Length: 443
Image 1 (tube, rainbow, N blue to C red):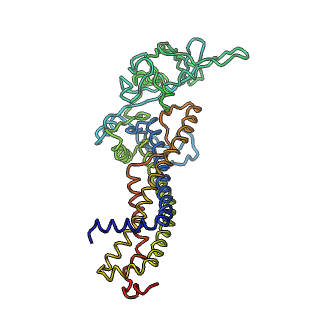
Image 2 (image 1 turned 180 degrees about the vertical axis):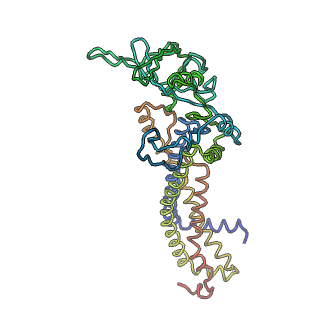
Image 3 (image 1 turned 120 degrees about the vertical axis):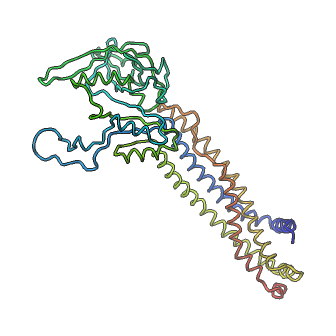
């Protein structure tokens, strides 16, 4: 029997029982649509989570901190230092030598030193007072840290500050009038801020030193750490800290607070961070969080797909029942086909083809229905997510609830066809093994 003849015969047999085939296929449609919709929902949630993280974090960054000992020593009696139980000699410091070792690691694009102010500070502008997180970096331009300016420039220099988007919200009037309305955040671009450093001497007296710092740039809002930082050159911040400590800082003995390691690509981040941890340091990267998110949502998609597969299992029972009834009704027909020369393989192929055909038709309908349901969910859920993002002050241009991978409809059709094929296997074997004489006498 030619393949084309086989296909024509299968289509003709299915067309003879349109109602029964349609009802059976509806079960496959429902199961396939459930698989497509639920897996698309899981994929949409995963895409939202990873894209949101990408928006607030550069996935090629690794933040490195000094390495602390695994076990903190107990603080027994006695006086003098070490109250926290950490021996300075047990720390793995980020010294210039260690930084050079990190730079030599494969895949490392750049290492940027970051330091924070370790002395008390007060910021004044006109009659307003504020505070801020001063961060010194050893770059001349903050674009090297993937930071962009909404006003001014990102270039640093002596006596210059580039501030985060939320810094102006920290200003307040230290002497407000009764029932005064909250002040509007001032526009600090191009303004000169008076930064007063404060330290206390051993005799308890207070010493102050003031600097005038010009705001040369305001960074774009990032919803991250940079929104709250005031960036300046590392050399100038080091001078401030040395004044507060009353001595020079020996970086080979004291190290830096942290460094930012930029990888050549996000794919190399995990390997680099593992090597840094093996050096005894601490390393944090958003990429590890993304991997955890992806693993979680992969499991979720498998669970969702399994729930949908239960509906397909029910549909498979329906296909098996339909094919069994079909064999009972066509027993004499099977006997005639065998009498005129049809082999067991021919009979088996015909009935398996019919069962697979029901699965195939149901798979196409289910894939289409699942895609439509996903699109409808996306329309309503996206409008809801957008309204929620706007009410919370977030900008989300294209929030999505579901995302249908290109392979999912193809996979669902193939899977539904296989379900139909397997469901029809037992009835088809029964049909193929019928004795022709008994089949011809069947009423």
